[in-house]
Amino acid sequence: MKPAALIQRDLLLAYRRRSELATPLIFFVMVTGLFPLALSPEPALLRTLAPGVVWVAALLAGLIGQESLFKSDYEDGSLEQLLLSPAPLEFVVLLRVFTHWLVTGLPLVILSPLMGLLLNYPAAAMWTLIMSLLLGTPILSFLGAVGAALTVGLRRSGMLLPVLILPLTVPVLIFGASTAARAASSEPTAAPLYFLGAMLVLAVTFAPYAIAGGLRVSLES
Amino acid sequence: MIAPIAPPNALSVSNLDIWRGERCLCHGISFEVTSGEALHLLGANGAGKTTLIRVLTGLGRADGGKLRWRGQSLRESGAEYRASLAYLGHSSGVKLGLTPRENLMAAGALLAVPGATDAAAALARVGLAQQTDLPCSMLSMGQRRRAALARLLLVRVPVWFLDEPLTSLDRSGVGLLAGMLKEHLAVGGLAVFASHQPLGLEPFPVKTLLLGEAV
Image 1 (spheres, chains in turn purple, green):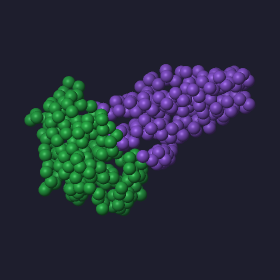
Image 2: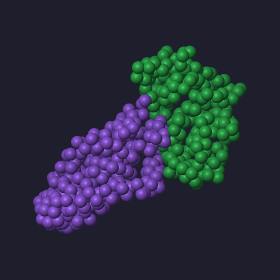
Image 3: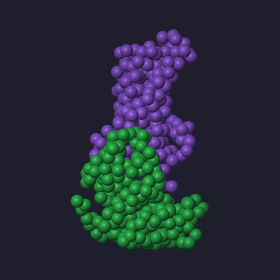
Image 4: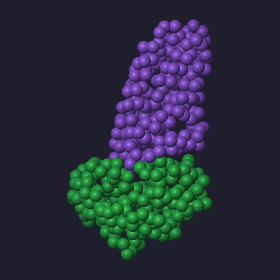
């Protein structure tokens, strides 16, 4: 098998339906923008809320794109071909989730400083916010992919997926948001960042097996 | 041009039971398909032809009985079995956002060995020479089906599983498929197909298996 060609195929497909990829980004911007409107535009309050708001908005925006991860491949039969290919499924889904993160998660990370500014997040702490999202969003992608694999055969998986996945994302959210909050008040952030890094390693190592298993079960009947 | 496939190729099934929910789709089915042979699955709509084919590919789960490829159970042969089969199902596995050529490249990227036949030749063979660079969403259903057939030509594998391969093919498409199948059987391949019409594969031996009431 040729890993580069597989990534190229996914990027090409993403490029051909790039308008769909904008939806989670617009959602991310709008949700973040709603908080100052709903609460109060007072800078000190926004500054306290910023880490949590950016993280929750990124988490929800990431979930929007997750359902489509395997859906179209399931519907047009490409997923069957994938399962029947001699290529190791675990590795193929690892590549697939990585490519999906590149086109859905990475843009969120890139947009996050802008959202930080909007919420009066201190500019000096911005790199730590980016770092926490850079480590955290791939974990969310892997967790979401497990849910997407398990629900791909179901007709109405749209609502089921967040219900399944959100409880699992709690640790990532806690450590991610606390990293950003600590950075904002100039406290050391190494510990929560290392913890996020450890969770990312765990996710990259074990999630592909769960995703592959989920896909096999989903396609069994 | 076409390298012969090393024998012995045999897919054997003994005492296969398949249940879906409370319904028994087949009970105690046994057969063997070897090099140069085709198995034609017959049966009314809903008799379980698709389910049986999916079980034979390893996608579906059998509830009893043994499936053997080259004398090894599917669990033992694993990736080796998957490397020796091609499957064309109801949904043809063609991505509408990609062109036929890109679809073949993507299929080739998953293979264990580099594609033996180049994509252009395979597409010309199935009559899509003019459409290689059009997105598949612009092709007709029959042309999409032909793009899926091109996948069978990409690399020579010994076992073909074809589920209703004639769906939306025109008359020349049916001829094309029969020609491809005969060529496949002639080099020692074997095929299992579900179809409501005979494919006209004479002089090659075609076994038939009737699913449903008369099992």
